[in-house]
Length: 328
Image 1 (spheres, rainbow, N blue to C red):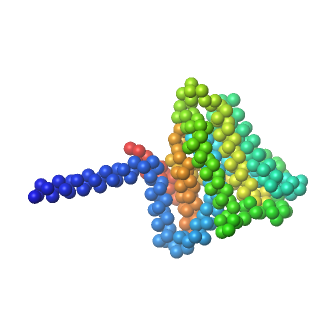
Image 2: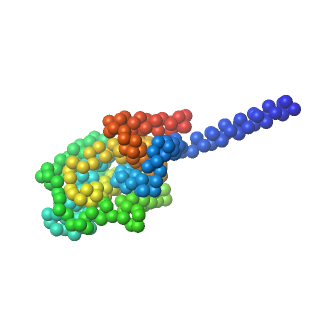
Image 3: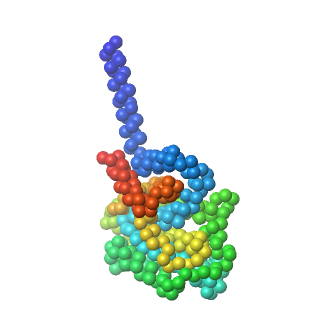
């Protein structure tokens, strides 16, 4: 009888360990658990957090980061990196605002021109990285400064004001109770998710990031694929810049400074390998939400800005550490 009880207890312990092991074998489980943890924490700390209106505010606040992060994820999975995202956002905004204000270009065309400007910066980055064989981190460090300077040159160091009322719709408008930037972010996510997971182009991105030489041998046009990936990242930054300019109702060359760090943090939090070849877009979305929830929760708790910087850095290390522990 005693032996049967001991055996039963061992079976229960083994079953529990197996269940725990199965849970932690889920890819990027660390960030999903962390997301749940911070939601519970802020919900207990302030009653203003867990409301529909506040959740919509969070989504609106992270919409630009999310749009840019989905493009950045493509670049990082392919084995590259783009540090010029923030500057591209600023350039796109001043291009759109300048065209709408100084030249009377219709607002939709002005926004398209701003997005196209972002695509051009992505093409420049991709061309220098593939044709000139300059490492992407060096290329985009250089273009980060060049593009920001170009944005200041376009507006002469001033802020562009006086756009038509319709200029504000993209960044401030709603469809029902959902902000338009949030809808755009979700649409971008859906398109990029399908491309990455269900199209040959997505498989090529993973292949290049995993082993570029093997990708070449298998017949993949590596240079063209890398260039397209940088262009897509630039287009998403351009879209983010158009939305930000619309939200601010102005064109400001100084906007989005440091945005590239938030974007990269979201990508890394989402489990995308900085070495390339690995990552899932839905996890990047979770990384974006973590950044937004942390920022929103700390504001609601009146935590000072410099403490927020420390906490954000610690969260990045913690989340990545949890995922590395799961892998081991």
